[in-house]
Length: 282
Figure 1 (tube, rainbow, N blue to C red):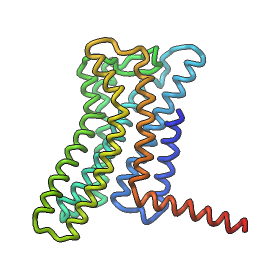
Figure 2 (cartoon, rainbow, N blue to C red; figure 1 turned 30 degrees about the vertical axis):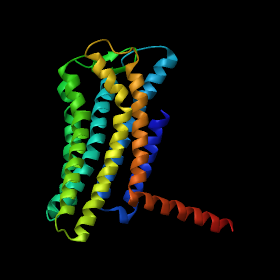
Figure 3 (cartoon, rainbow, N blue to C red; figure 1 turned 90 degrees about the vertical axis):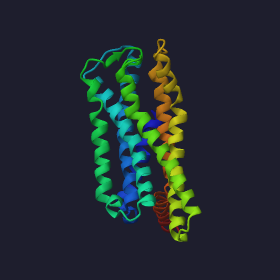
Figure 4 (spheres, rainbow, N blue to C red; figure 1 turned 45 degrees about the vertical axis):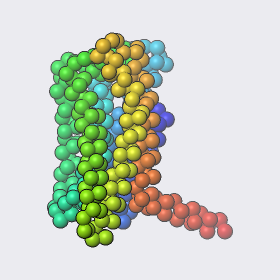
């Protein structure tokens, strides 16, 4: 709950900073705002699960309330849109380097279309298993979820939420590395090469953020893999829940660290208010 609350607070703070500061009204920062908004949804979804689980544990009861299925649905959908937000950042950087003259592809309108597409997809794909009676209430973990076993729905959900966005981010990064290396071998204007290298560094930062997800997502991945051959641990979701919450918190901290414009804008506001307080006291 602590990490989830931190994610919500940081995401709201970052999103408000982007909205209020006109210097942040750029296409790249729009992509960052999308990540912050998706993180707020992830945080609220996780917090609602945490409150329900904690309440039932304290009362030492287990029952499926009316919102159990809804929490499950929002959990799958919100995680997907959060991961795809980082994919969109990578796609934008790839377009600016490889297709610098395709201005429409770099425009806010086109990027907003991609953002809307990922949100629609993320909230549509769980429908494939939400209304087929595959989602069940797990009394040990106090949640509704797909039972962990070798099934199409588990593989489908894993690919839609995790495997597709992460693998595409890695693919874009490798493609961009090869392209920039090819530019350095050709006769390329210095300013064009410098910009391409700058965009590559930004994608590298996105890869680092995703690596946090990969590292802290290993326990849940192992549990899913184990479920194909044997019964998973009794409290498998509670274990996974801790690692997922921690990973999202670290990802948002890394996003702040690596987004120079956001960091500069926020620190300027903080330092400005600190100076006003000092001036008032003196």
